[in-house]
Image (cartoon, rainbow, N blue to C red; front, top):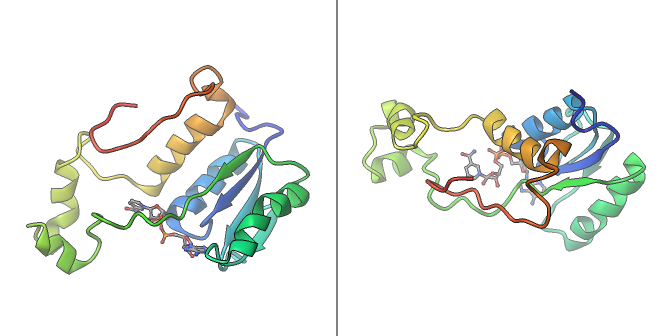
Length: 152
Ligand SMILES: NC(=O)c1ccc[n+]([C@@H]2O[C@H](COP(=O)([O-])OP(=O)(O)OC[C@H]3O[C@@H](n4cnc5c(N)ncnc54)[C@H](O)[C@@H]3O)[C@@H](O)[C@H]2O)c1
């Protein structure tokens, strides 16, 4: 099913794990995707928009650049954020939280309702649901928060 047929999307942080997955999902659903990152020359995309999001000139120009590069813009996924708090990715971070670094991912997986931590594709699929035509009824004028232990 071409759930993004005739859509155009911009994905920032597109060279990273989650951004790459989101851009791939958009393309496979039929969308034209513009990819933005500091360096995303190696990523597939109908338009490559390189720059630093902390440069407000670049950040503010992105939607217009994507619009011109794709001939339209329907979806914007602003993927890289500042939320690194509470994500224990370093060995020391795991130790601090009482996990054995060698088995941390398995142990951490048991602490979430689904029994495993997410893969980038799991996050990309959430974006697909809320940005595609498949959510035509659910998303009208509504906001969704995706948080730990919170049903969506
Ligand atoms: N992976 C996780 O476990 C996890 C958990 C919670 C939140 N997040 C958040 O989700 C987002 C994506 O995660 P990910 O795992 O794909 O990260 P990642 O590090 O693999 O990718 C992030 C991408 O964003 C780009 N980027 C970062 N700052 C930028 C800037 N100022 N200008 C341009 N590009 C910039 C990087 O170059 C990189 O390609 C991040 O904000 C991360 O903090 C990730």
